[in-house]
Length: 219
Image 1 (tube, rainbow, N blue to C red):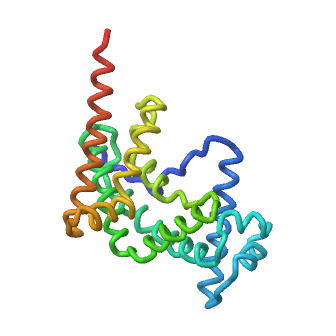
Image 2 (spheres, rainbow, N blue to C red):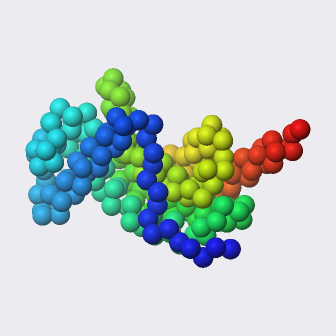
């Protein structure tokens, strides 16, 4: 087993230069908001836009309310903990190593979800309000970033469509939405919910591996 570690998870790869620019703009706004909050200020969306040298109209498209901006800025602070968790997992693409990476990722994500449950439920609430108001809700890409980082060793070995479907499936297995379903609807304990999320993620990963083995055996 390789002992090499990732110093930093791979960046997500948006489909276009426009996608990359949107990602940079969102992160610039969040970084600026965090800096202002750390000085003891409670900046408005307009003030953050001005400080980040981004148009106010653009800023409001990403963060229509000050509450949404503050919640996103707080959640963005979870990145270092997740990056450390991913970097501590095996770096190879062998089945056991990849399962260790994905299992470790989901366990860490769900622990952070329980520790930051109020903020994450508030984010869901704000997103629902945006949808009810007829606005297209915008959420951060943290979950996808982390999943893609965990899958990085196997990315080039999977067909593009299979890889994208795997990322989508794992995104359903983890995060606050999975926690809400397992705890609120199924009535599981926090520990049971964590274990079930990990089990689901590994089941999805093993299904993909089985499909790839079957495809290779075809004449």
